[in-house]
Length: 260
Image (cartoon, rainbow, N blue to C red; front, side, top):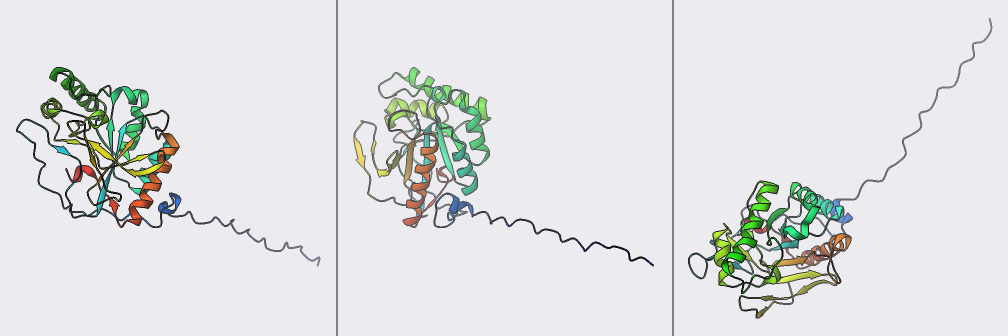
């Protein structure tokens, strides 16, 4: 009886080894994950205005929580990497938008908002408001309130005056437009990294900030395009560097709107 030829059993090739994807914090150069901000923020009482009918001004949040706040102005930055950073790190950021600067970029801002960024008011045209008549200041502030309500369905509660300069008329117009607080800053980011800054006050004078970040500091990033201004991938890189500094100082990032 002839022998039946049998083929040796086939060996299934092992799937190629794929290295585990590094955790999100390592992809952004951080030593560890960002510590979440407290679930119940230690927030001050509602900021008080100098006089009734004027929006209060906030340069720094009086809190015992070891948090700082990241704020970005204008809306010119359109790097998808920044969206990934905000999403992967669950990074709470506040975007103060100027309509004429955002231009056709509202779709990008909508993606940022979808991953957790909040949208606030920075005027229609980035006009320096101090000294302008009430009608002009109100048009700049209320006009952007209306634009952002139309775009995102929510009216902002916070306002940052262009260049950080304002006067009593600005505070009255802001209050009349439904603004709860005018937000300035105590530190800033630029193309050469983080640095302490001086924040203009109502008269245009400056108040000095410390060399280190302190709990409750509001950090300002200007994202308009131009020489020496962070935009695109450079903004993502600068933000990663700032986050490393925040971690080194034993701080984390809180959501500004949870504290004001």
